[in-house]
Image 1 (cartoon, rainbow, N blue to C red):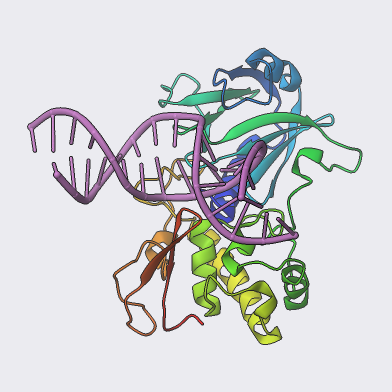
Image 2 (cartoon, rainbow, N blue to C red):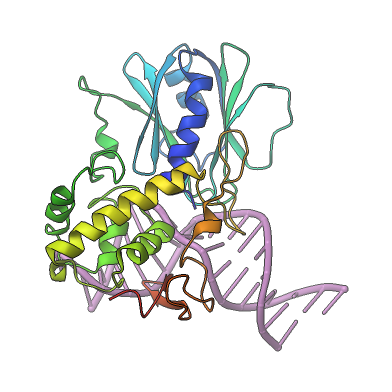
Length: 278
DNA sequence: ACGCCCGCCTGTAAGC
DNA sequence: TGCTTACAGGCGGGCG
């Protein structure tokens, strides 16, 4: 389940391989992956001949800037992988939906069994902004940089804390795994109302968010049992070994020893400690 | 405005 | 052992 840390690790791995490279060919065979376009040929025509001059990230979206003025936007969804492959003759993995051929002979391949992910080409505005991503709130890692800023963001919506953390319009990049981990570190219940948080609790939430996301990036993200998350070189992450609550239902809390609980809300699992989180 | 469900997908694992 | 079912879940759409 790639969330902000996993997408950031992919970005950091991909960037040195593609920066300054020219796109020489595109094979877009996965119709659902390029569902915003009419055909693979349309995607190819929009990209071939352009140079990748930056690899950016906003929330869970990767943005490969393709000069002049265009960008390839990629969302990994549930099971998407973006791989750099030095040898174009190496066999394709199953569910390879999009291949970019670069001018050094290497390839970037998008692989996605569950096809929740997507890729699309956009025209960038003069200031570099992308209207298709305008609905996203500030990036949880790079755009939210103070307790005061986080408290102001939280105060803009009256909803449950977990709903708020996972709402990409409120703050971008956090999904089910990291919302649970952040709330545990902040010692806050998932069903706390955003308008009930004190200034002190808002400060704890900021520090927990920053520390959790940074630690997850440092450990290469989280690779789960069923999921397929790997970085641009096919390497698994290691942060799953540091999860305090996610997927640990029935196991003891690492802080107080109480059994980690699993609740369901909005059709998905929430893991938390009934003693540590208030 | 908000809460919550559904549909979209495939691979894995648990249950009968 | 073999089949069925549940589950994983980001996101957009829809309904109450």
